[in-house]
Length: 257
Image 1 (tube, helix red, strand yellow):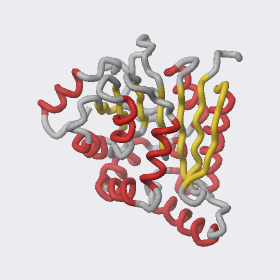
Image 2: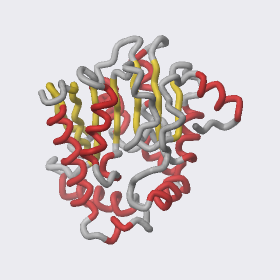
Image 3: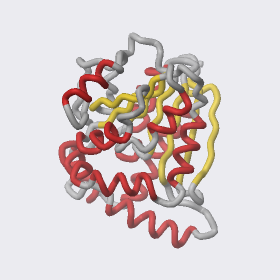
């Protein structure tokens, strides 16, 4: 867990009873140390993009709405980054609810902690999104959110299944990820999207040299969203930001159902 000072860290730790300190916190993405270092170095630029890119705030509002949260609920955001979603989720669960943000990169997590320092129902913890550092013996996690994350995971389908197990039957999972679009302005938008994908891929990860980065990203995104459909008894799909963002929300079904 990262805060700007030890007192803040202690205060936030006390507000996260669902965190399991014995859970592994090492990332499992390709070349994890390089990726963590890359996103740590560019944390402030990432924060600007995550907050101010055209349409991104509407996407984050849509993500919070898709969670179907009620006052008093607990929602976990995996790969929370600099915390751009956490305030929207906080509003949805109210003072009696809990919002827990998980990220592996200390520098971006520090920005998330600073952004939410005045929100008493929000806590952040350092951990691996594929192995959330949460106590699964507490059946009180109502929803899991992952935005712009699954494209970075080596096995996104397995990650989604893990998250479904975390919330259990009736729990909700919301995924939002960037993809190419078929909007009327697709030639320009997709060209810009491809450039963004290349620039935002850690330069020392093997995936950078393994062919078409956009195709790999879209394969991972499709795999994750398809797994959520498979694991859910009800789903809703929508497109945002001129079709560049794919959002899927699912209510997890019974095992084998």
